[in-house]
Length: 253
View (cartoon, rainbow, N blue to C red):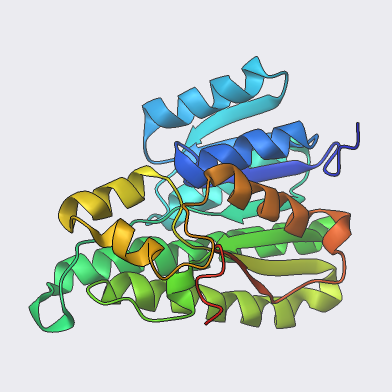
């Protein structure tokens, strides 16, 4: 069996559920040793336990990406435990509340930007120097199709994900000569708790969006995780600064 990440050391934020959990399992299946990070302890511990139950190596560390100290400790812990940092998936994110810009609250907007955009910046800030010292690596930031197009009622989320793609492209340019590839994955409608919350807040939004989606179905976290593994593998060795859509064709029209 081909294991494209055999022996690699990886960290994944936002790994307590959804895409992050699927990524942790996929990375372990591909041969990587994984640090599972999340602000939610029970879910994070459960993800690490699931990885170990399938024969993989995983450890949980609580990390709030709003805290530079937490993020620095996460990266330092990964390097201390594994001796290196080869792959990082900066996946932690929140959707915020649905409201038009003129009715949204500044505090709620700032929270989404702090987690989704500054959280990715803090991760990159801590990860990149370690990867430079280690001779290279691969990073995938979780953006969204909302980082490529607008989405009514979700201005903070849309702004944050557009920003993630901008950070991705800039980091890719700055660190290519150091052997570090930085890409983003842009999921579309994926069957996660986040989508469930959006549907509860705005009933019918899922079916309305599926109606204009060429494949006409939801994606699975596993499908996004497979794309992330590929971006971190040698199969994507000449790919950097790219925003890869995993969206069933949503942004094609």
